[in-house]
Image (cartoon, rainbow, N blue to C red; front, top):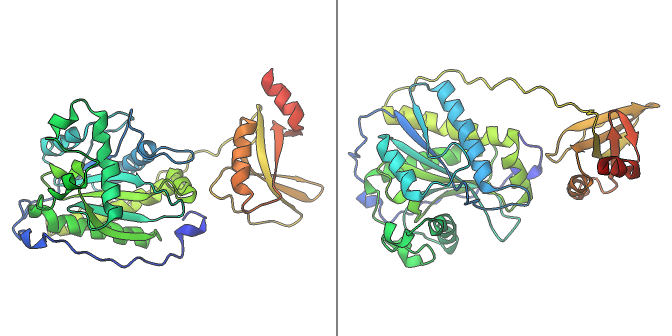
Length: 369
């Protein structure tokens, strides 16, 4: 688990579902009796569309990384389940082409992966959406932000039949769509949120809103908002290797459970074994670098890195200095120091060349050469 506290002891948001069109759902849905053979993973945004932008990262990069990690886990663990990506690199893909990929590949499940954003920087947690009519201003705003990507497409007004992402009434027409698949979409959404809760993620529940990317997908489909990139702690969590793998593993858990129910049999699942950890980074490169010293003590200390890495130490005369980060520039070190000061108010920047500590003035001179 990530070390920061906002991902641990959360008050669980009550799960409330009030779908006005559940009565339209048919028990004999089109996929009834078939096996789940193909899944579409749809990393939101890409290319000229960055999605939501945090203090350091962009939504398009975070969700692509998590989608690729998720796809790798599926390929390794359920080889009978084909994975198709709407994009597997940083490219712009129009929303209608994302839906078309699902139809072209005769997929049985569509999962669109996103990161949320809010003007309230303290908001956090994961939520999963279904296609439908919004029931709150907040849900409408989430859908409008995701739908606004079509304005980057050529001739979007005619392509999407006059759909205007800024107008609430454009969303209302979605309410009756996908009635044949709503039950399975609800099942998938609930499994995803339960999996997030099992990984100690804050549960913002299953919701509905008018997402254009889901409108023309003829299969069970959901849109996941993994967390809030506007919250610095969640941004760092989603962008970290540990956080990305944890989120991918949670979604995989829900897919595995969904496939077992969908197939009405136990899915053939291989034991998932994480990749061996990458070789440790060279803590003492020959080039000049800057670090933030957060503590010095004669006895071993437990250091909270606040999700920054790596942690390096040097011991001299019985005193061990604990330093976070290996920054190539002083500006980057200052940025990390600002965050670390919340926990370590007396932390300060030090400079190294190899294992030799040098003055900041000397370091700056060497970099300028």
